[in-house]
Image (cartoon, rainbow, N blue to C red; front, side, top):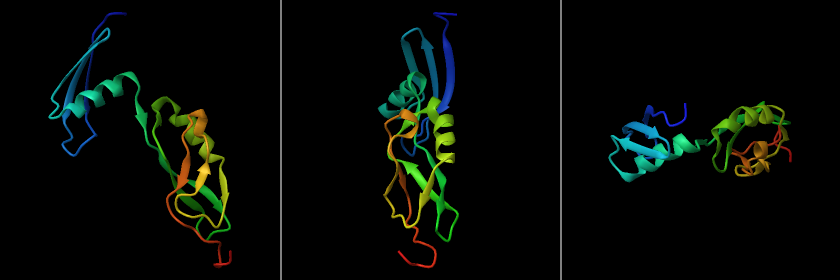
Amino acid sequence: MPGEAVEKEMTCIVCPNGCRLAVRRAGDQITVKGNLCPKGVQFARDELTHPVRSLTTTVRILGAALPVLPVRTDGEIPKEALKAAMAELGRVRVQAPIACGDEVLKDLAGTGVRVVATCTLEREGGNP
């Protein structure tokens, strides 16, 4: 129902404190309790209104001694895009050699966020 208050508990992940937050949303009004610093308030507001996540996973690599390459997003993507992002990454194949920081994908699931390699993998046998 519109106007109905929503209450939620969450753990802030912005700093090492890991505060347990009690968040209440009534219409446009959001109140946060339990935070030890102002970052907790902003985290709770963002988490309720537009949650985002960094994504770390692997993609297939061809021509390397290992079958997969660790990758990560170079920014955060909307939480609702995670499933589409993983499906897209499941279809990605890269060719060895590849260096740490190399771009693997330019625009993950239409989010505008790049995917980059997080390690260097040489061509199997060490030949370039």
